[in-house]
Length: 418
Ligand SMILES: *Cc1c(COP(=O)(O)O)cnc(C)c1O
Image (tube, rainbow, N blue to C red; front, side, top):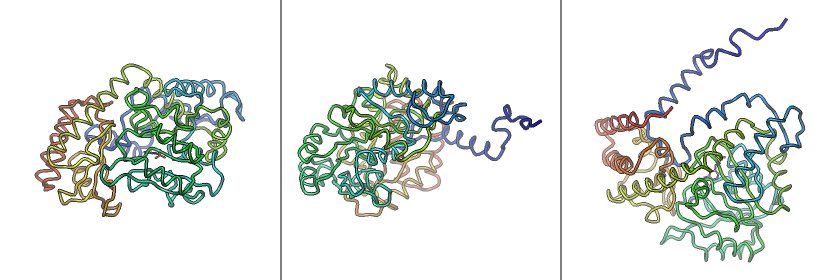
């Protein structure tokens, strides 16, 4: 008789001390450092439990109520719940909640709506775009022709006249708005008019500002966009994953087939449950308070940094993220990020528009208030954080870093997580 090994259903992480030590190390890191990386957030215990559940055992393929495998009753209920919540939250008719990540969501849309060799017009990575929008190093860059638009040199904002000119010349099949390091409101109606003029689909990747859209604090890309993609784990404050949203029923089979079997296999059901949980949270009034606080905190951080002489790209932010130009400090983003990390401040180096420097050692840093706001920081904490960043950039010697590190840890102890 075959029996499970003793402890198989009960022992948990203790059965693997090496792995357990690394995960506990990561928990301590999250507890004791201030997370300013814009692509991160801190999820609730609810989301953590939904995502880390027995759903990891279940394989389903296809859409709810039309699966290829049996035993899908509860899987169907979970996925249908996530779809229903996504549609309500973002005020659209259709949602596919299966993409494992934002890049997969984008690849699925391209796979569904484009033919091999069709042309994409998207924001340049150097100006704040995302690599999954046709960058040559990705599958999307290999399979489609790609043209880019950037930002205006003077305003460091999108210039619809430039985008219209580009679109008229390159005649794209799809125009993509939204990026990874663009902090301003995007004129979706203006993009729609350009897409109509050249006969292109209009897609919005709202990965970074999805939470703000859910709360009505940033314009909804609908009804202007044909398709909207997003990640659930940035301002939306959920676990890692992607979504695709649309309104036109004639796009449904294209997009659904683009996801599966186009770019993915079976569903990560635990991930879908994590999405359902975060979408449920995002529909409650407390989430709007969270987003309002995150915006206020980002504004305070930007103001504090400006007052210490650090230039914020485009002069500020309309979202929870910002790009900081380090040029005046004669320090590059990689060196700055390493020094800040030693002080307990997690940030990422980033290109700034028209950066004369390479991506590995760029002129900027990208910061966000998403994660700190989730643990309860308010404007006074972000004013302090801004001063600590200034202090570390002003002198990355060991003593200085040690002083900031101690303050960071004291602040983190005041705002504990998990
Ligand atoms: C973060 C981000 C993505 C993320 O994709 P992943 O595959 O989840 O890493 C996609 N698009 C944009 C604009 C992003 O900012």
